[in-house]
Image (cartoon, rainbow, N blue to C red):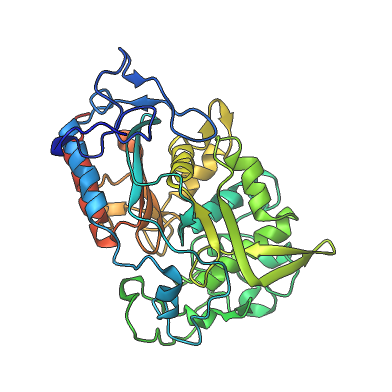
Length: 398
């Protein structure tokens, strides 16, 4: 069993058991013998060697552990109760699973300095999946499958979804920045379900209401149906299931586990080269989406922190990473399906260079290039995210 270290060392455990903190008696370079459970060894770094005050870092971990999301463990019941919208629009059409408890980990210089909870448990991750779609779009650009982000999608995707004067004007950039205004019904869900959506109001009982569609590229709106339309368009361009592409091109090169899954809906089977293929969703709004553990999420975060490079291999083009975290014209807090901290308006306690993959229910991958830091939080109260970032800042010594 892990040794007991008292309140100041909250979260500290011994190696080789699941590490919360590496011990203070690290080697001269700060590394600690041992590995994070997973596919490929992950070096650990004692908090002191990583530039953190040990007791203050323990306080930050305690903060994350004690600020659990208000969502119940029974995700299905929560969605059916109408968190996102009332019946019948809230019908669940994809896989759903109960969630785990608060979980997370912290990396500095690519090494583990702290962790809590079950970091290998593959849980639903909601809109974090949108950021993974952004990575896939970058690979499609690198492969020449998307020649120009400002080209109408309908020039290369011929499935009836981008026809007519309105949808025919939708570009790849519009889809990647949530400015497409794509109109239609996909997999049984109309875009109007998410039209006029307010992220701040989610969890209430009011309907979202309606508004008049704007021209593509002139209005920013968080709309899961349109993100799913991007996913289907990418599937058409790759010509193979997106989870297979993601596994081959991203997850295996970075040493991720085989425990993650990416689901679509029971209604999202499409024909591709004469065979049925599931189109995956960019979130878990109606079930489905990415089920993944915190350790694998941290690897993806570290890949983005390293501008797409992993152990000498350029997994994602560096230029794509830079574009992904550039503010879009209509929302300075949003890039290519990544949330930004422009003006420190979203997370005042985090450096402005920070960017995040964010999912409902308290799922966050925080990437801070200014401090060479990645933190993954699972099932932490969204209202407490900035408080956690403040606690990390208070623990940081440089």
